[in-house]
Length: 176
Image 1 (cartoon, rainbow, N blue to C red):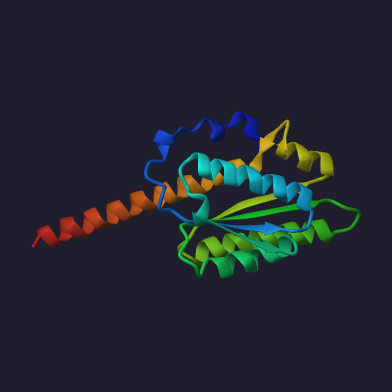
Image 2 (image 1 turned 120 degrees about the vertical axis):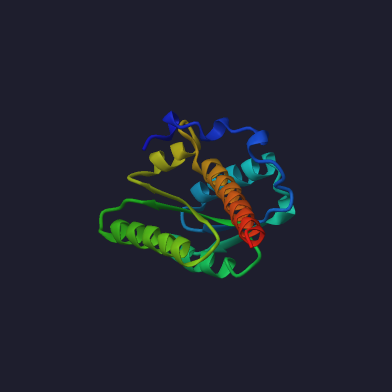
C-alpha cells in the first residue's frame, strides 16, 4: 500500500500523552546499513518528537534482516513497551530475497502472537536500491518514522486494553 495516502505523519503530541516513561527497543540490520541507518534515524527522531526520552530507546544491531527475529526475541526479555525491527532486503537475481522476506515477516508475526509486546515490522522489501532510498528518507518519506508512530499507537492501544481490563475487574468486584 502506498503510504502517501496515509496520514501517519499527521499525528500530534495530543494523540500520545504521557510517553516519557515508555521504553522502546529497536533492532537494526547491519546489511544495507546506509538504508537501515536512515530508517533508524527517522524512528529515533519521531520517538523523541513524541516524548520518548533518548535514554529510553534501546538500540541493538544484528548482522542481517534474517537475524532481526532473534534480536527482537532477545530484546523482548527487557522491560520494553514496544520493539521496532528495522531491515532492508533488496531483490537480487536469486530466490534468496523471497526466502528472507518470507522468513522475517513470518518470524515477526510469530513474535507478535507469542509475546505480549508489540513488534513493529519496518523491513523494506524493495526491488532495487533506489526504491529503498526513496522509502528511507527520500521522496516517499521515512518508513522508520512511520514504524515509530505504529509503535506509539500500539502502546496507546495497550494502555486502553489495560484500562478496560481494570474497569472490568472493578465492575466485577462491585457486583458482589
